Length: 174
Image (cartoon, rainbow, N blue to C red; front, top):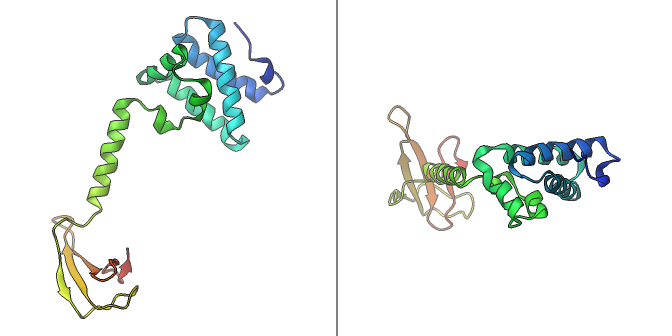
């Protein structure tokens, strides 16, 4: 059972972080010595990259992702050398995610954006009775959008001159 690297011997927290990384790597790496060296390298890079306030959270994130059975690509990349310890230490949670999770996040994100946009092709009714707060123009279009069958319609106003949008709820600017 190789111990933590010499660079971590002075800090119990860093030593524990190396042990956690090693425990996450060991089942996937047949050579225990290589796993210990890799865990030490990953910890050192995380320590160099992050301030103490974020250091432990980053280590926990890496450990959780290495232990996740759907993220076997991370350990394989580290083992094959196609993913360096430094590159792994720099990865965000989004970058460590497997392809399936990335696709789900992309779908949720695009669906969320489209749900919050005004419907395309709805021009609205032109009016000269409303003055834009941004440009002072009175060439505006009024559009009513109903988001659900049991909800009140929301009245949107769009200035044709500058593109400013606001809606009727005390006429809040968007």
